[in-house]
Length: 227
Image: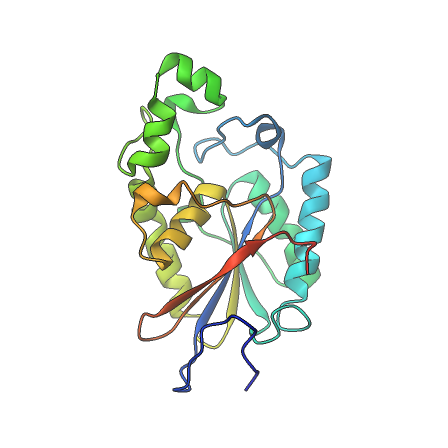
């Protein structure tokens, strides 16, 4: 059995975990200007910088179970949100791993409704205080969109399905900032009011492990190029 990485949760009962590696997509033109880009619109695509980030993330994922987090099983499955930016990021990872990309519609980004495509200043102008209420309120939704609680209800069954088939294995999920916040928040038993405080940089990797008894561990988010 591989020796646990420094700082990992220590288990002495021989239980085998399911490992889920969450990768946020690379930057897009919307990411670069801070605009809200949700799950109701397929685009946009990655920028040149975003494609470079995706390649770095692919290299980082390829190293999992080797010289990067060697206590984890090698990635054996790859799942992505249906959005163009996640599909492009997942394609880079799939080429590096030699794995096909499965699509799960439930991993689409939070739906922003009337706020889709707007920047924070534009949302504040039209809905004073609305964006802060969405980030911190947990159950507050944009007009025609989803709250963090709504998002968590949509994403949780997808994660349960992945965990159920990943004990003793590693599955890579390519998704979005709000989606990853919801997964990490639920893994830590944090309420939706706290999920907005979880930082998820573009093409960062976050590892969530879950054991059959429901105990979960989260490895801090890191940039793909960092060791």
